[in-house]
Image: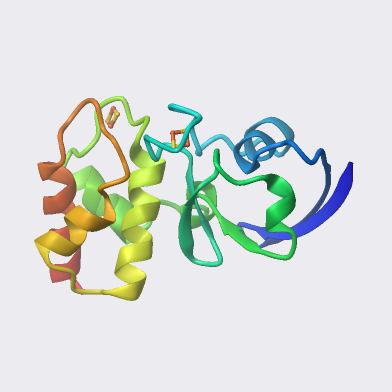
Length: 152
Ligand code: FES
Ligand code: FES
């Protein structure tokens, strides 16, 4: 076991971690952070996406010991003061059905908009390419993000 210290949703967390535990396991099973989902556990679906130092990362593919000293954001952090304006845009466009992909999709969009506040449709497609959705298809996602950028 190794002691790790990192920032999680603006709170400093200190926790003992086994060297073989993934960040996804630690977030969900040890820290009770349930928005990152385990869809495939092999890096294919994007349901486990979190932001590490502002960059979207698949938490099923990274060992928790690697995030020592990092800043991690999940959907819980982004929405702790209520729905963010981006989440409201997704809601207005009825983007999700089951919602399993939602946290990862929203975090990928958050990363994109931070880097590029006025992305093209192509930019959006590239940004969410790693986030699979079985329910709605991707057109409402793209429309919601484009609509959000127009309100800026
Ligand atoms: S659960 Fe991590 S990419 Fe699917
Ligand atoms: S809304 Fe169900 S997987 Fe995306």
